[in-house]
Length: 171
View 1 (cartoon, rainbow, N blue to C red):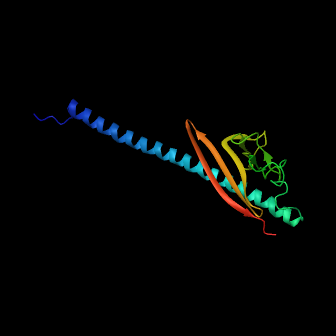
View 2 (view 1 turned 180 degrees about the horizontal axis):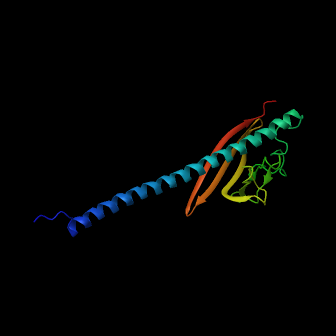
């Protein structure tokens, strides 16, 4: 008489192989989700930095159109929010004027208006994990380096996106 079923050992081996395959697939899915979240955060950080550059250049351009000094309201005197050596931030959705941070590395968390998608510092908006800081460095009388740093953390891991662009007095 011939048995047509699986032995206990064969069943255990088959179950073990199945468990290994399922665990590998779950690990791949979890790794993919982590990569997606990291990539999404990098993209948001990039755009927050770009917005910082654009707002500083916009103020410079408005100064030119209104016959003011090219750095008025940015860093032309020590009371300006982005004066050399200080950190500042911008919130174009709320104001065209930069705001001085309480110190380098101490800018507030960026907030997000979930209904419009805008980022800024409105206290009624949802706080994000991002902090944006803008610093200006004098290169010459007609050139300033703008450095925008966006920091964020996920769990115990701290991330940073830092970019620098020079702006010029083209008058």
